[in-house]
Length: 79
Image (cartoon, rainbow, N blue to C red; front, side, top):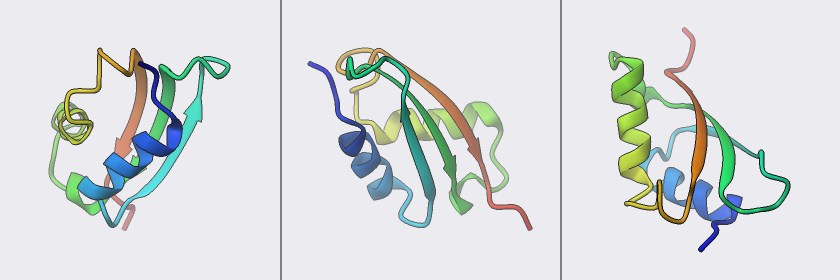
């Protein structure tokens, strides 16, 4: 079942309440191909792989099921 960008953002905001989050639909409205740019202090000191794992955990099992593809750009805030 496809997801809406708002659903993805809502899950991410729960996990990363301080974050700047930008979601883009890459699939022309198909509901399962998105890009996300997430900047959060929770990523401080984490590797890119760890940051992405945190995002996947925030999506609570939707990745690969309801959400087929999510291109991620994650980073801590710039100082």
